[in-house]
Length: 122
Image (cartoon, rainbow, N blue to C red; front, side, top):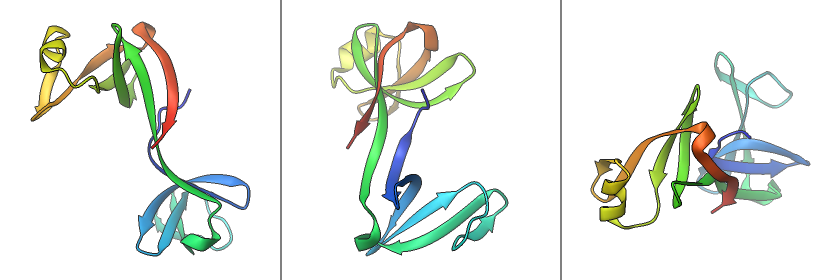
């Protein structure tokens, strides 16, 4: 499963990485396509009015690790970077997580130890 944490938009039956831009939506591709402009090597963008987009939302990858709820922020080899979403500081500390910001606890979890990996639309 691909780990996603960001905006997506569905346009003309396809799903794109996206970002909001006022009343518009920016959709992105890694290769050239009609109507897309290169913004840097390997990154192409097309700006659409929000009314032309079939679906627009934020997608996160959620999971369970050591019986507690997390979101997956990224992956490096056989590890997931995870952020605790249970809201209990003592539990986060017991799990050995680092306080990334006030009340935000993150850590590295072995991919093999993560359960219930799923995509959540916010």
